[in-house]
Image (cartoon, rainbow, N blue to C red; front, side):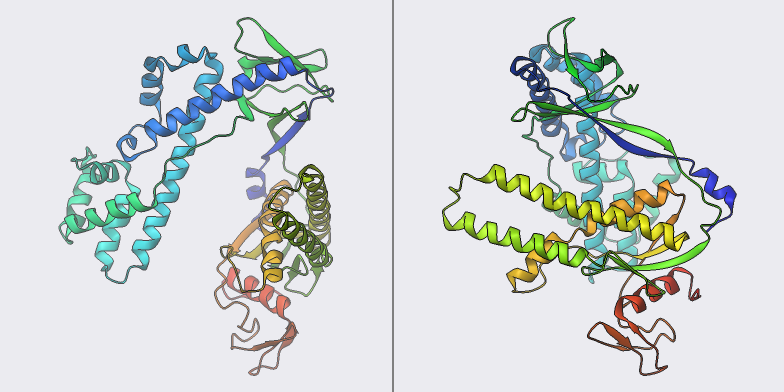
Length: 444
């Protein structure tokens, strides 16, 4: 781990705190909140439809042009929507559009990099266009971009080395193929700024569409916050949930000085480079959960989807997931307390996919909580001022962590024919993670 001064830079982190309604919300009050949620959805969908395509690429960042156009569109007046909600919905939708463009650029850039018909100069030019907003906007909309002098000269220099028109047509084809406009049909919540609510009387007062009227929701706690919150509505259960982002100080431990490599697995949650396993019951819990889901799915399809017991099914599924998540958090806490790491190296996980024809195996893979494990590990490392680094994992399980020669794995045991090293398969993988992360130095 870097020296203590570097740890001090990460002195605060963001956590989400949830507040819950204490009593069932009356149907009339819930209806007013659902009206706000529906208008929130309509505004977001309007922004998606109007600004989610290539014609508005130059407007979405930083978004003030969109703000002015939305103000003049008259949509807020037609909906009768409070401005505190209208502009939050607009900027939230713009954030979603920018996120979609980021995914589109990443996908097109990946495909261009894998295309064997392009020269290095052509790939460089395509990456340049994908990186510079104005240049990409000019190509997609067939107009000359307005660029700063230095960027303009760089673009002309790169374009002079390639067939620019051919690459422009390729870029337009790929964007048309992979870019999609966001869309939402969910009206189960909305965001609220500080002006849209106030705390009082052991609850929260939320603004609605009626002028000078607020809906009071009693809460189970008396905490008060002063930031933008997310309100989630559950009309079927008559309850409201308020999600609040808060900044908390990260803990720093003087005795957390070890460097640890880990490998995630389906049976044991994670194994360290020294052979210590954490979450060894995870495989059994996930297999039990996957078998139950598979049986319930078969029953549901057997009667044509007419089984009325979905409420009981969802409740038991939630209990399964909460049980697994509780176990994961418990074992991650034990891992940090026992190993006392300053830096954790973890293999970068590949994308999920179907692995074979066996439905039982595929259900188990689908139920694998690897995304949740990674998310919670990242959060807990930040809370404890532990540095978490990812390492590329190509062929990492077949390579000996001691000498680098190719070995053989059988029945979960790795054996190297060159140096005779023998260890658990996950232990060897974790050792390779650590070795690659530390630049070839195997920290023992």
